[in-house]
Image 1 (spheres, rainbow, N blue to C red):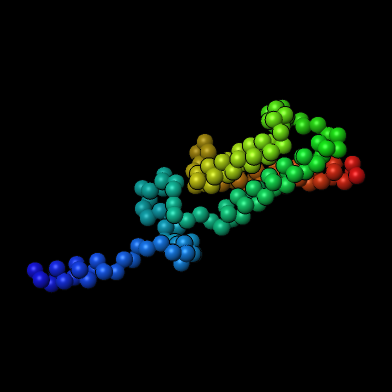
Image 2: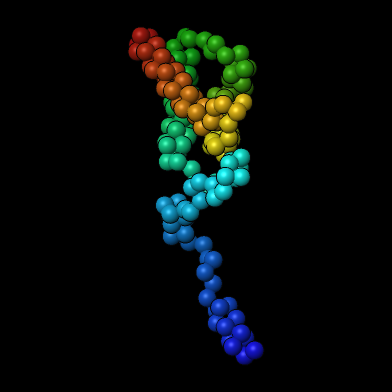
Length: 153
């Protein structure tokens, strides 16, 4: 009985679960749960690790959304009109409100799509595919706005 008491006090002296930035980096680089352990778990969609491509898509989409907000405001100053009636109503509240609502809506959408990236939409398409579609759409929209901006100059 004395050996178990000595072992338990020796174990309690060292706390391994302290948080540090090494923990974050190690957990990101060497996370263990990349796939499901059993075939029964295939329906479980939440894992510890997401593919780095999702990080690229999420960050890129957010940056393109910022560029879209800036270019939209520039085009509106040069005489263009907002075609989206929802954003037009939000824009009537002011540019700061427009920018914060636009970026918040984009961020929440990206967060949900990354969280559900392993899920299947209508049992066919992975939800992560929608991030690729949104990234591509935003890239095309920013290119369209840039062309219009250069034509107005």
